[in-house]
Amino acid sequence: MTDAIKLACPHCAAMNRVQSARLDDGAKCGKCKQALFSGEPVDLTAGNYDALVNRSELPVVVDFWAGWCGPCKMMAPVFAQVAGELEPRMRFAKLDTEAEQALAGRFGIRSIPTLIVFREGREVARQAGALQGPQLRHWLTPHLL
Image (cartoon, rainbow, N blue to C red; front, side):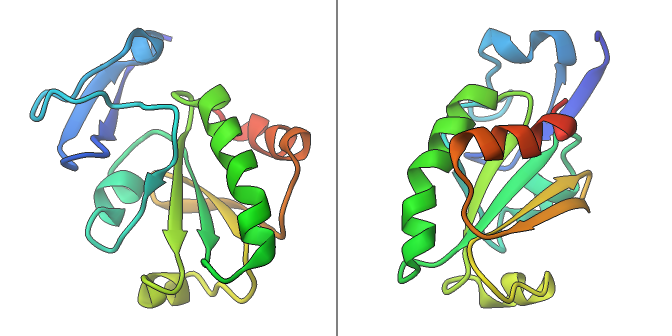
């Protein structure tokens, strides 16, 4: 793959173009100079949602969660571990449904945790309930860049 893909910086939301073959080479944002990938989930908010999900060509898996949710707390370290393994072939993001109720409502989140995979702003897969590492990797594999 030598095609350039468009993706947003998780720090400043500036759009960047990176050659697909060079995603693993420690790409930095052209605007703020910070790393485009950290191997950790990004906090998703109404303020950065459009850039990170709608305008980016990189697949994004969003974990819709809440601080009071026991299964969400159990799944958080699994989600973070898989993010470290699969990024930069997919962006990992977490959306706090209590803090971002309008955004969670927009996607009809009825139970948490709920995972949604987006490609260029379109929902392509959804999974309700906590998953273990092997299950999560298996579920995400068809959606990797």
